[in-house]
Length: 159
Image 1 (cartoon, rainbow, N blue to C red):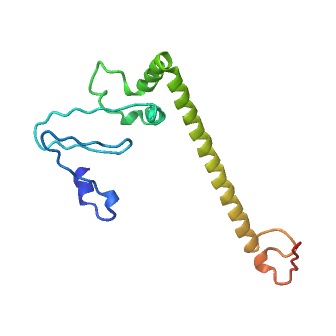
Image 2 (image 1 turned 180 degrees about the vertical axis):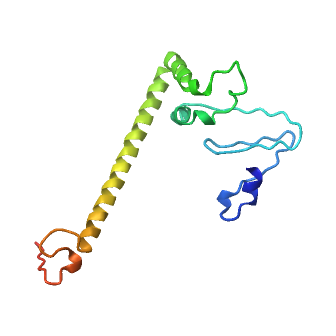
Image 3 (image 1 turned 90 degrees about the horizontal axis):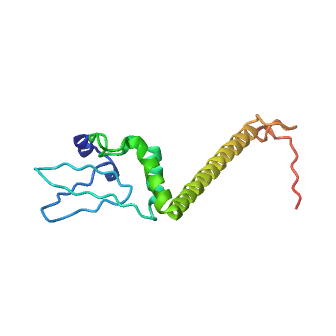
């Protein structure tokens, strides 16, 4: 995959950003950025995934929707299976910080409501566009048989 992405042509956004991190340096990968590490020589790396109130809803959403993308647990028999991490994390939050869990849950609910509103808006818009298209192309109802064939129709406006 790495070589394939490096050879890709087109917008820079489709090619990887490559850096070499030297001894004593570090790199910060922002929240939500996909990344891949290729060690050029034997190395020791420390990684940290940071969860705070500002990204808790994103973390819970990720654990719910993408357990197949959780790394670092499948090769360790003593680790909790990835599919169980969300529940275990929520249980711990419920015990220790129910206020944060409630706030993150409300944020996720708001996102769902907003996504549903946008989906309905797009559906209604597409339906209205199809209806207008049908009317203009002669497939509509009414005496004129559609505005596209309305040469003899009379229109009045209530100004």
